[in-house]
Image (tube, rainbow, N blue to C red):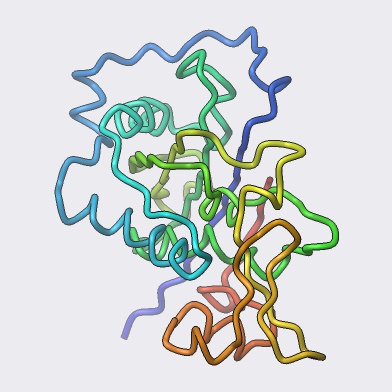
Length: 239
């Protein structure tokens, strides 16, 4: 019997224009290197990345994302640097949304994508914030591209290599000043028994109407609090 301890960290980035000014050199990676390390091209893996996003987007009335090979290549270039920080405009002059997560141990695509929606319960319609979750369900985002790389240096070396996931989004979500107009986030009201969307969102549903949604059932069953996907794991986040 083996005991596996999983450590993971994650960060999220939206379109904050002042973050794109950087004196840091652009990463020196060629397309060949990206193809050799990190670039996702397997159809099953692409389907897993899309499912991890589109299942949740469907529950919040956001259109499905499509896969972008261009975004996947840029994500691979950044993942190959093994830096646990945002690219901050180094990959392109065009702003992209960006979610990043890293973990030790066996860290699958569905598990990694699941971490991006864990902060759903922290969203307050009265005081909108920008998180991994809001980027995942951002209405105006249409394209997704992700990459994965094995990295040293993110955690203590005694824990072994980390699996680093980088996902890029186009158009970028988390645009300051635009939430919640560009999202359809659904929340459970303990007092009314309804699932409510913030102002300017078209989704106002009775809880029974989404009882078939595993994600929504989980949200309801925990009364608005999503537990960690890995109970007992040591987690640190930097948004």
